[in-house]
Picture 1 (cartoon, rainbow, N blue to C red):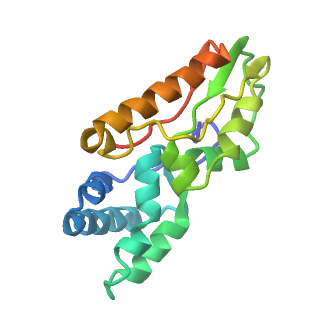
Picture 2: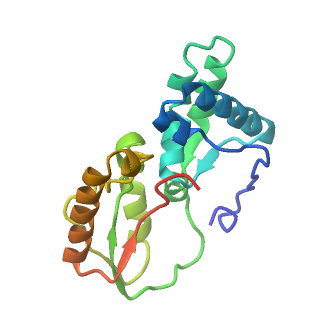
Length: 189
């Protein structure tokens, strides 16, 4: 989509992991090391905007300012990095996308990844993008922003609570009657 919108897309090869799992596991030193590697890779890319397509990773990347706040050498670089970071839906929503989108005769509900809506405060952009698709019927689900139970390593550390949240989320999805569930990568690959 970014290339179709005539953007020059560069994927830094040496970027590595964002450090989100390390943050969730409490390994702050590993998280800081991974953050520094990521910042260096993106600085070398020469990009004006850093676009992320995974909600959990995006929230961690935006928190580099906090993660590296005590490091005098890295604090300003982390601030500059996070200031350039955008979720892919924010970027696409802000663009005038050329062409006529294909119609999709379907009922869709949107499941908000908790790291996107709560940590990054991105909620409207994905819905506006869906609304641009002709004949698509968006059905809002009840409690769309309620967590799914799988954030970071929560499903491993709190499996019973995670299952309850997952069950609640699935019931809300099914109650919409939608034939498609639109969502995002919650995080980590």
